Length: 256
Image (tube, rainbow, N blue to C red; front, side, top):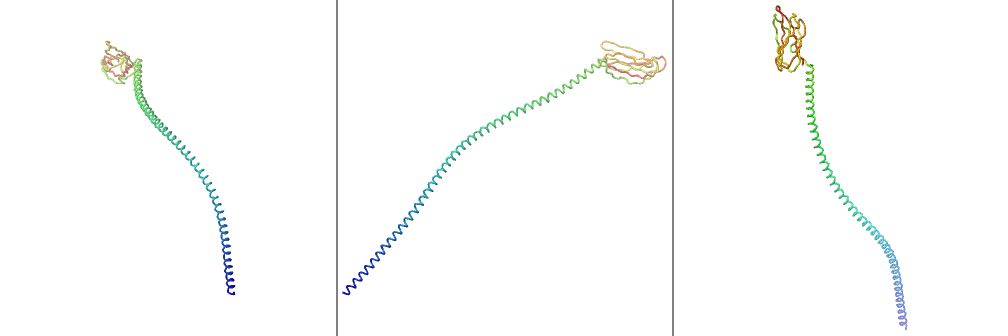
């Protein structure tokens, strides 16, 4: 009986311990799952917040990407327009360059033509200047000839044929001088003599005229004789004394 009570008591203790262990296990399991649930809830709540933040960032990034894409498209369009404008400007530049080359070529042609005209003009001016100089020289020469002829016509030119020459003559003798004249005019024979019987004579032939004239000059005087063109004009100065020598100083001037 005592053993039976002891067994029952042991069974009760074991059963009690098992109940305690089971309760402790149940409580521990409940606590574990409760902690797990809290952890899961906390973890899940944190993940949602991060997910929402990531979603917001993603949206912002997409907006930025869209905006950047728009800007890129705008820049590409602007670049395309700039490229078109650059091509147009380059075409204009090429056209203007061609026009400039043409204009430069035209200018060079005009300059060459102008220089050729200047050369021709200078040549003509030079030739004209030479011709003018020649003509002026000829005019001067002709004018000089005209003046000379006018002087000749006016008998304004004179040439001394004999200049104060001294002559010693015996009685009845004379001294001759041979001259030539190209123009009509006259001669003056100026004599200073030691006798009053001194005379002057002029003889020549010209154009069918035989001229022979004599004039008494005396101690001092001038005799004039007309002259026609002749290659041989004889001028004579003589002593008309029958006796006695004479000394004369003779000057003969030709006027034409």
